[in-house]
Image (cartoon, rainbow, N blue to C red; front, side, top):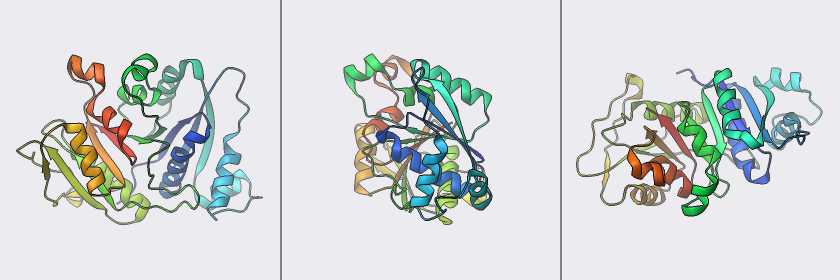
Length: 275
């Protein structure tokens, strides 16, 4: 099964808090031999950070290249291309969305910071807003979350994935995206744990027979977000794959979609896939 990821966009402010997301973007680019667009979200007149030395430093740390190797040598050796672009930090959301409109991409990797209540309503979240207005699969990596890519050694630990499902949106696209990402990174399938919060599990199917989904659906009752987070902890998952249809109604518009509320509190990365 060939990877469907050929271009990855990683918006970043190059802060220490975004380092874990950067490691995930780079490791996925290596696994899929993709072009990695590092989009620097910068304040005006403060764009003196060059992305490639950061890439070289991380690849050297992972033991994949030598410190003296040039960008063309690394590209030829590892099969990835890295480019750096800039968007104005004062208009980050519009700048990132404009970049995504102008550059075909298959995956966005974003660092996100947990926000709830008044702070979130006042400041909003660049990561959440970008995903809400884009249909591109988006991997959210919070600074405090346990990632599935090691920052120090680049090792991948992706064994179990929780996939919350409902009757709508259809889960097939998210299931396929998670399965392909796992295959790209590990060369094997992962344990997929479908979870439904309710009494009657939806029917699961996939457009590809290769991606059939035989695991039984886990049923939980109660608050949807809490049930998802509790199950993620209970099964010690490395990733949550969320099928999402965006906001529905006034209540979700106020408190955020289920996906957004999950990613603010999840202890692992969240891959959100629009249905």
